[in-house]
Every structure is written in structure tokens, then in C-alpha cells.
Image 1 (cartoon, rainbow, N blue to C red):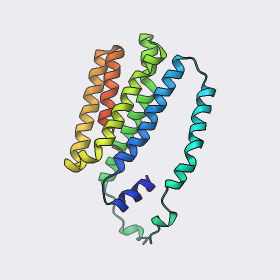
Image 2: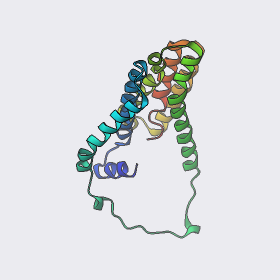
Image 3: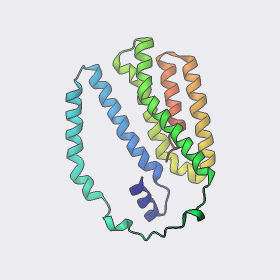
Image 4: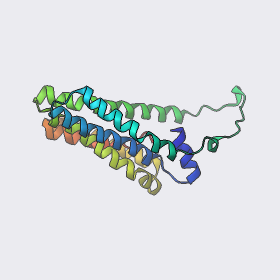
Length: 196
């Protein structure tokens, strides 16, 4: 987040949603890779070895793409403790971020369990809720900066919360692989821009 904030500040544009979209894109690719491997009964050791090899392979390129460390140097002016303000809006936004993170974690953990244990689907089908969630998360984050600039942060958070809550509720009421997958997709769309 600190590095992303620096790039955003240097560019003078809203970019944080796009950075989070790239993180979510990695999650989506990993979910698809894991789903195919699980369906083909490829061991976790082999999956981890492939992922680690790819990770190590991109490190030289990643290092060359980083900004110099002196770009983020600045003088801090500490203020006395009694003069600091404690705006409650930051506590509320922190709670919203916490709830979004819990929703994101739950989507990654429980969609597959629900389909496997309740509807006895194959490993590939059990991965569909998270893949749908991650796909809509990526999409929402790629368009989040433009939507925030066009509307407002408050509108985006309210609309996203309604989309996540109503969509997930409807998907759970429908049930089955299709309903659960749709519910997870709406959850991904709704909370995609909450944390960035």
C-alpha cells in the first residue's frame, strides 16, 4: 500500500483500485490453476513447485521495475500528542475495511466447502464460486478508479455494499451450484473497491 500510495501521489491520479485489481488477478489465476490441478489430482507439492518457479522467474523483472528508494524521502514533523485529532470517520472506515476483508476471506474459504459438502460437486465445479468472486473482484477494481472519479467514494461504498449484501443473499436463497456461484460473484463485485 505504501509503494502504491507513492506512485499514486507522483502520478496525481487515482490508481489504487487498479493496483488491487492486479493483486486480485493473481488470485484469480491461482484459483484457476488450483482448480484444474485439483480436478487432475496433481499434488500440492507439484503445484507449489510450479508457483515458486514462476515467482522466482519474475523477480529480476520486478526488481528492475521498482522506483528508486529515494523517491519516498520526506521530512516528518511530529505533533504533540495532545494536539492530535481523532476523527471517528477513520474508525468507521477501518471497520468497513475489516468487514470487506472478512468477506473476501470467507469467499475464498467457504464457497468450495459449501458446494463439496452440501451438493457433492467435483473439485472443478466447487472452485466456481471463488473464480466468479475473483473475476468480478478484478473487474470491479479495474473500473473502480474511474467509477470513483465519476461518482463519489460514498456512492461507490453504498452501492457496493448493497450489491454484495443483496446479491449474496439472493444467491444463497437460490442455492445449488448456480445460486452459490452467482451469490459469490455479486459479493466480489460489491466489495471489490471497498478496501482500495
